[in-house]
Image (cartoon, rainbow, N blue to C red; front, top):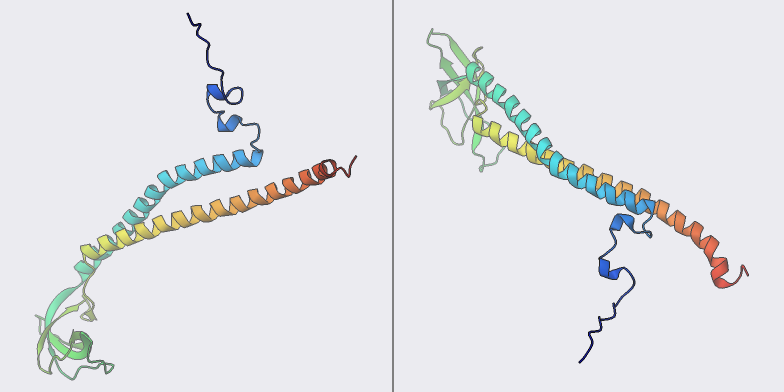
Length: 202
């Protein structure tokens, strides 16, 4: 008949009870705890602040651009004009648009002249559609809702990148400050310990 002998516990005392929580580790310095909390705060800021800032900036940009869309759409309209002269280019035959003198007449008979962007190679006398404002001056095409949406997305992405850059720079700055303090503490402790360790202080 064999008696049951419990196995001898292996490892240091307390090893069977699980690992010691990091925050209660007696070897952890104040700088370690500060760095640990800092990482937690940065993770929270990244998880909450990144989407909040990017959405807020994106929506603000989109709203502003849509106001421009409505204002320009109300102020500008298209007319049919005639090209009255040769188009001016910078000598690049690969250009898509070039400037040419044009003339058009309002429904009330008022004649206008100006310079508008036309397709490359448009001949004199050709009829083109151009945008004009309420004052009868040649204007660019109004901003479209699609471009307003694109501007909102671009601004939101740029804001998200800025948040990441700021948090990263802040993390690195605090890390450098903590490491400088650690090195100073290690130097002070070594000055106190080295004489006893080397025997010079005996």
